[in-house]
Image (cartoon, rainbow, N blue to C red; front, side, top):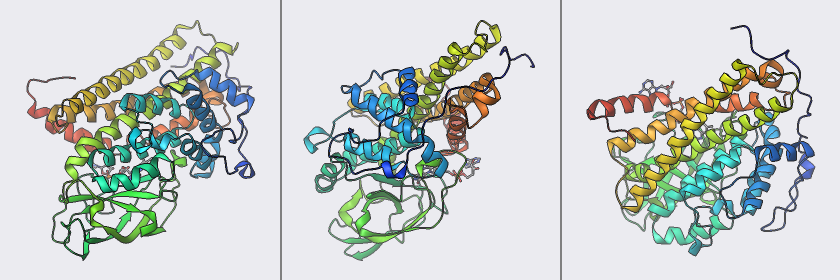
Length: 445
Ligand SMILES: Cc1cc2nc3c(=O)[nH]c(=O)nc-3n(C[C@H](O)[C@H](O)[C@H](O)COP(=O)(O)OP(=O)(O)OC[C@H]3O[C@@H](n4cnc5c(N)ncnc54)[C@H](O)[C@@H]3O)c2cc1C
């Protein structure tokens, strides 16, 4: 295909957003966003183009947060550095406590709010949005499965923005396989099954989003020295109880701002910090960690692609160099829209299903629901990436492919390429194939 329907490739004229200067980062007053660096006119225009999010009781706060995230996204991407200003803004706004119940000082929000907010944040910075949803995923795990004493200790800290939780599930031997672990918890005092003993935790963690900054970690471990790899415990470890050693750099094609570099963790944790029952991680994973991951990640990927489409459409409308009456341009826009509509609808329906099953007190660990949750992740990762790939083709070399373009499609493309790898789609496809062979009635969502 040679006719792009675009009348000449022109460099987009709008300047890129200002790079934040390190000196601009000041210690902000508590509970306010007012001291965060102000957005440039370019960023403000870009945000106005993206539109006000409709999801929240506090739209001004969310709108301001999206602005802050957008302002710092390029710097985090270029330096492959944790977006500290953006995460600090989330902390100050109380967003680390998004899923913390109000009786523990949190925002007490629900999954519908999480999915909508993640989309909005991802329109500003996909790395920061992923950092936030992965933290919220750990909070949901705690709220639903931690003991009362641990909840009393942790939830108020999270609500105050003092405790960002990182996740350690990937292992050097087991790879991405979530439900196995190689390195065992060891008894220091008492028995590993007793709530009053201490446990020695020593863990190689190849990929830990925000691990350099996290104040706490949820870590999967083999339940005991004599346990098999499928006997997995999830344990909470406070950073203050650990020696945390950085063992390498995070220097990837995309999602560079997640700063997901490798760590080595060592330390002693009280046995009452095992989440759920010893060896019972599967139940925690199917009830909370997997559904929250697939809902949250999918919302982020969709939000990033959606934000990219808003930017592209605004640019196409303004650019006299492009013939938007061209059937080819319209067909390409329609295909992008088709992909995002499908992800949006499946995400919303899946979120409703998870809420329905939880409200009924039923288990999410059924073959049909597993297929559907996996399908959400597969569809969102593939279609969001495909949509941005199409946008790059439509926008062309300068507006689409160039890192100098204000549309930032190039960054979105690199970021979204990670979606199929962030829990390997191959694993989910082979699992779904096995489960689907058993479901001869083909019960669909
Ligand atoms: C942005 C980002 C952030 C992340 N943050 C975290 C984090 O905070 N904490 C954390 O623990 N992990 C994190 N991860 C890691 C993630 O959860 C996965 O564990 C990781 O991406 C898998 O990497 P892998 O492809 O090397 O491993 P594996 O999943 O082990 O796969 C290895 C290879 O085997 C192939 N493969 C696997 N299974 C099959 C199969 N059944 N059939 C055929 N081929 C198969 C895969 O395609 C792949 O090529 C993050 C990843 C990304 C991209």
